[in-house]
Amino acid sequence: MKNNFVKRITSGLLVTGLLAASLTACGSSASTSEVAEEKEGKVEAAADADAGFRTVDEIKESGTINIGVFSDKSPFGYVDENGEYAGYDVYFAERIGKDLGVDINYVSTEAANRIEYLQTGKVDIILANFTVTEERAQEVDFALPYMNVALGVVSPSDAVIESLDDIGADDQVIVISGTTAETYLTKNYPDIKLQKYDAYAEAKTAFENGNGVAWANDNTEVIAFAIENEGYEVGIPSLGDQDTIAPAVTKGNESLLNWLNDEIESLGSENFFHADYEETLLDTYGADYEDTLVVEGGK
Amino acid sequence: MNTDILIEYLPLYKDALFLTLRIGWQGIFLAFVIGLIGSAILHFKIPVLKSIVGVHIELFRNTPLLVQLFFIYFALPKVGIQVTAETCGKLGLGLLGGAYMIETFRSGLEAIPTIQTESALSLGMNDFQTLWHVILPQAVSISVPGLLANVIFLLKETSVFSTISLMDLMFTAKDLIGMYAKTIECLFLLVVFYLIMLLPISIIGAIVERRMRYGQFGD
Image (tube, rainbow over all chains, first blue to last red; front, side, top):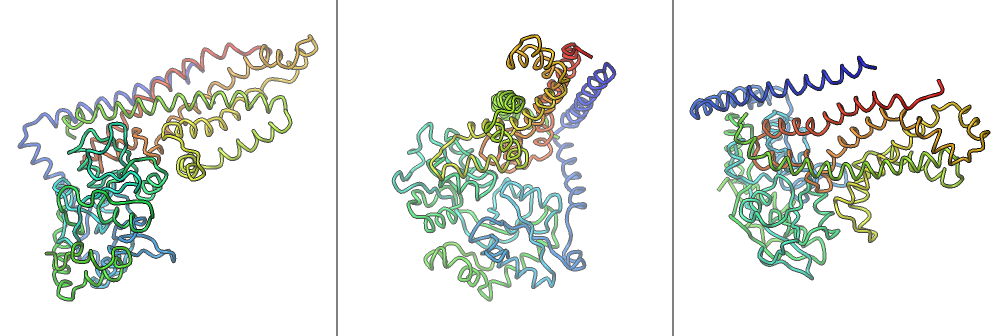
């Protein structure tokens, strides 16, 4: 009994000690001059990248490309009634697989782990409605855009929120963790209380259950939600800057990045993304949004 | 690893720790109460209630906490029962923990030789007095290691709270990574804070366990 007790205390102290040691080690490396730190960061990034990504040739050789898509974000990336991936992003992914001549292994992602999946090499490309932002561009490389997006806010028709000033001090706004809506509101409206969910489906259910006064997300999504569900209205259709959505690859994966850029440019000549829109988004948004949403040939 | 970032994120992790502890302790208290009542019901073999406890144990031990939280938080409002995220967390933890606590207490009760019950009854004590004065003190002390294991298990289970929008430690880390992509710093803080929360319990548990051994007699 006593031995057991001593053992427990010792192992506890040991863990604490190890942590303290690693802390001090990190502390000392961080206290070096900024220039050195930056250099170190670059070396680290390069080392990470070497282990983390596959070039176009390596992908072709292996015969399979791993593409990260959403599985719960209709109509952009979702699993349809037959269990197949479908949507605007997936339509493009299918074409990438075809033009590379490889099979596609779809990897289902959540908003918050898109960067990690690239950095750890779990996927070659992220095609999960990934909005281009400065912060993200420091962590991953974005190819040319294929869609436009802004933020939007949807709320119940009987209490429509038309301006963010309408939101009371105790009201909660639903957002999905890791989205541009979350970052934008955190940065520009720190007083608004956010209720965060880690997946689209959960945020949607919570909003339907009345857990928040409004739901802020990409405007494409809130518009789709309001069209599909009665009793909701998009009170704020465009918030913040107009952004673009683009495929992303692991930082430093130039061969795949260049291949994607060439692909997107050449697809422009056949109006591929308009066809994509008509195939996947027309039912949801109608023809009115086609020119607003689609970016053809990377421009 | 960047120490400035660690310091910047520290308050957020502190809030998350307090949230986890607040919900954790209230949930565990509920679990403890359910455990005591449930095991007493099983001990006295009270008809009907006995079956209800049996169903409770099987239902909550054989479904993940994640599923239970989903049900309480997302499904119940559809039939008109609205619960806040915090209540849902406490309830889920209490019901799940209750199922485990019942079993732990019961194993403690069963460990007491029946000769003691028989002796107490023959001395003229009634059922409740036998349980309260003779059986329970010993049973609780035997159950202590199991109870502490349950407490640590339940506190760790709080890591699935992110599903119901509670900013616990796990969700805070995931959320910060999603926004600012400082993966190493965020995950490091996550491990540190879980240890800050659980190591003391583990150590105090070892001390309590040693002390409580006096509670046994008869052997």
